[in-house]
Amino acid sequence: MTSTAPTANRTYDLGFARWVSQNVEGGDRLSMCMQCGVCSGSCPIAGQMDHGPRKLFMMIRAGMKEAVLRSDTLWNCVKCYRCVVRCPREVPVTYILSGLGTVAVREGYAERQDTERFAKAFWWSSRTLGRTDERLVTGKYYFSFGLVAGIKKGLANLPIALAMIRTKRMHLTAPHKIKDRKGLKAILAKAAEIEAHEGEAS
Image (cartoon, rainbow, N blue to C red; front, side, top):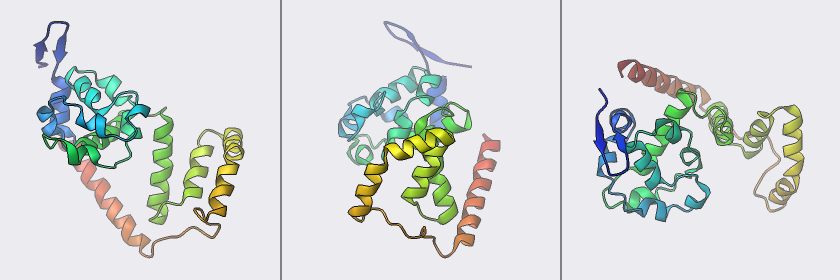
């Protein structure tokens, strides 16, 4: 049963907030948020988000599930943890955003997000090599839009790539790989098994 809390302007649906509290890492601390705005004020790219962390938490309390899970805030977070360190109520903001991102992908809300495409490319490199290779990540991201679009994006950003090569910020050698990739695959397989088990339990 969905419980609600009336306000002067609208009725808030607390069902989604309760679900987040029970199913998202750090979500049990969501109720501690007092909307002081320290998280959004500390965020180095809050201006690039459609909703800052403070507003997103209020949207969770308002039951705005779809708007929350379609928000680019989940993907633009750079995981600097300033919000976590500075929160006076010790709300693990970064962890909650990451958890919501996982939910957004699982339930299909993030399927069309450009940032989700990049996240997939980043994860592919990490999973395959045990490291992230900027050339492979960028290439896979560009070509996720299609062959022609990928070529156009690559050519448009060629000056940046050449500048990075000149300043030795990007190398031209073969991609670096970790030695124990077999061990990495075993770890990832176990993590997937645990996640699937937890998903069935919930």
